[in-house]
Image (cartoon, rainbow, N blue to C red):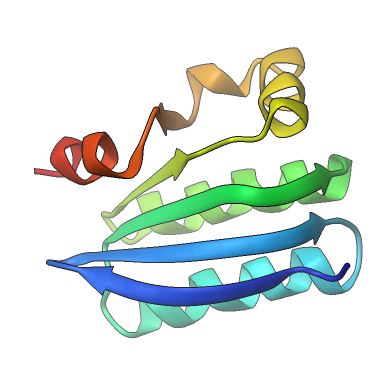
Length: 114
């Protein structure tokens, strides 16, 4: 299933609920486009809900790192929530837990932005 995302806002936090696969091609391009649009709209607090992302490849990992870098470059914060076991394993293997702020649930993530 190609990557799909819906955006919603709680207070000043933009939450993107992704579903599908973050892979080379459409998936990574969609993630990049979504993040760029949010930054252009002035959003500086972005939360990626990955509960329904069942697969991520090396290109997808690179795109997540790129998204993090873009948001930080705009003086913002990007956090992750609800990682599936497969995505969590990949983030651990690549040691990106030292880069990303991964929160256990949405409420904790929203509090962490304050």
